[in-house]
Image (cartoon, rainbow, N blue to C red; front, top):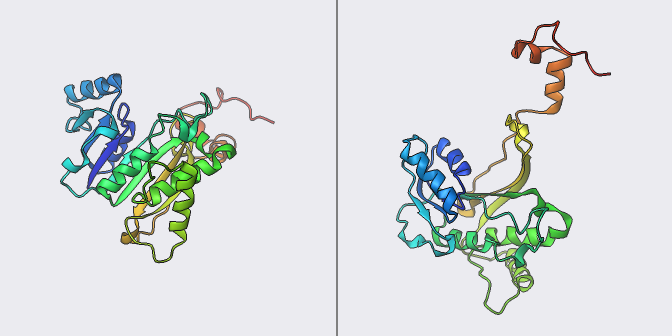
Length: 244
């Protein structure tokens, strides 16, 4: 399976897709230090990254026409600063908003699927219309924004396109979910929004994976079955008393 990785950072999401069986046709990141990290890992011969074709550049300047393979997956985490709970909360008006660049890549590559992640802040009530607009951008990447058009006007036109039962062109069936890394066994409280889409013509029936870990499960292992302490080799004399 062939993939393109945008806004790669130091390569976290790209590692995940590599481990899932994808071969990257391009890994694009413009931050110098992130690229140095990837190059250092390549120089050390780490199997997961040694074959990555790294491009240190702005995603908006990448030549997608140079990609000749059929792309199965487009993946990436656009900059989160416009939507983070910290910062200036400028959203779509922030020059670091790269969702239009993602739509442009979808338009150029028409991948079979995409996975995009961003911060939980994009789901807050004040960004409700903003997030709905982002979803429309990704759902209908060929309905481009006109030079004289505000994003609100473009949003209205995207909504009309969605309501048109006779619509044609490239489109994606998509869904989103906010996950916490702890719910999948990662020892870190890290909440992220994932948007996953499949090209409409493929008629893929897909669902998000179910969490594998939970606080309820941990409490049961600790105070009902005691398996938690056994697993970590804690003797009964060393175990704390159960909380009230």
